[in-house]
Structure formats: structure tokens, C-alpha cells
Length: 166
Image 1 (cartoon, helix red, strand yellow):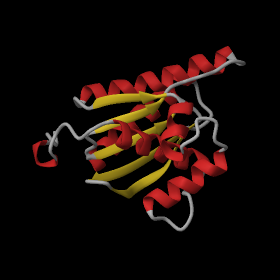
Image 2 (tube, one colour; image 1 turned 90 degrees about the vertical axis):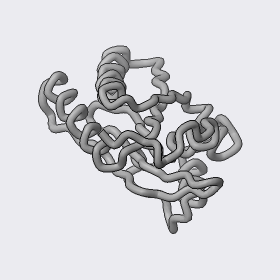
Image 3 (spheres, one colour; image 1 turned 135 degrees about the horizontal axis):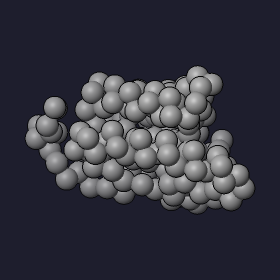
């Protein structure tokens, strides 16, 4: 099962793609989608195009997104929510299933403690994927954590050979 994990943002969005085969996890790709300092609508267009590119390149079976939990800045929260909407649209257009996980759920799955520190999550991401260190920047490692969480919580429902590449 190929899982594309997303750490939401509109200025910088983390992505991490993993392959789960049985109980083995393998890192396929990770990084960030950076948007230039332009209007929000144009940023959303950039995000949509990049998510489409990642989907075409990695052919994920599922797209896993971290749920938004904001308390302070409502304007930022709304803009990030719009960016998540664009990600969900791209997945929907390709018929890809979407799973969403809260930050404590991701931490619980990856570290075993729902209030784990960021460094603990990064350490476990590297360990679970057999990497010497956690990918940088932090947004990429966070997206991989979301993908790993999904791999633990979601059973394989479609065999890889049955995936529709188009």
C-alpha cells in the first residue's frame, strides 16, 4: 500500500510518501510544497498542481492528512483549511481514498504517547523507516508521521495490482 501523508499549510506544506508491504515500511519520498508570496488563490493553485504531480508520480492508494487544530489565529486557520480543501479535491479527482488523523492520534501511533514532543516523533519516523535521521524540514517529517499513522490504523483494502493508475 502506498500512502501519501500531508502536513497542512499554505505557505509550506509537508508531504511524505511511504510504501507498506506487510509489516515493513519504506520511505519513498518527502519534502515540502513551497508557495511564493502571492495571493491565496494563486497559492492554492500551486498546491493543487503539486499535489496532482505527487499523486501522478507515486500513485498512492490513500492520502493521509493531519486534521487541523487551531486555537489562536482564525485567519491563518481558515487559509490552511482552504489549502487542505485543495488537497482533498486533488485526491477526489483521482478517486483516492482520504484518511484524516488528529495530531495526538499521529503522535500516539508513531511514538506511543499522544502528547509526544516533536523530536520524539522525528526520532521514531527515522527509526520506523530505517533512516539515519529524520527528513528535513520538520514539515516533511511530520507528513511522514501522518503516513505512518495511517499505515498502522488502516488495513490494506486494495491489492497493489488492482490500483487504477489513471
